[in-house]
Length: 214
Image (cartoon, rainbow, N blue to C red; front, top):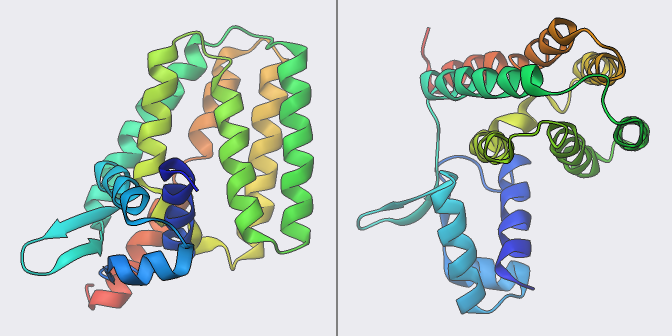
């Protein structure tokens, strides 16, 4: 297993609560779970730290980072700027081949929801949006979108036990794909913007309940 694969597996375990915020991670524990070498593990942990998912604390070692609600709101504001900018730069209608690929991924996403295979749902969601923003001609902007999406991965799993949330996500994904077929840039921008804020609101509620903040 290489460092990129391992960092993805650890990241997914963080998203799904195997390692909640504040959990101390030891090399021995991770090596046992993932059957990885110490060298590969350290490279993976450095990558996750650079993404803000892990933090190194003096005299305590490595812990899963806990974002404050304000920090999450700030990241989502940046994501809105980046993603709506990409939408405005996207030439419409999008390439029919790209649209077909998005429809195929979304079909798989909806089936994974029905199967309650939420880890597959998570991965397919990442694939869908990565492919979506490949329609934007600005490669640096594509990378910035991916980087900032990774910074809030740990927020994503909060609503995965709410099937009403997935109904909403399904509608929004279909609206994004539909807008890519058309010629109305502002309709596409609106569809992108509408898809962003739900997880950040849920995270604030969860954080305030956990920490007794009102």
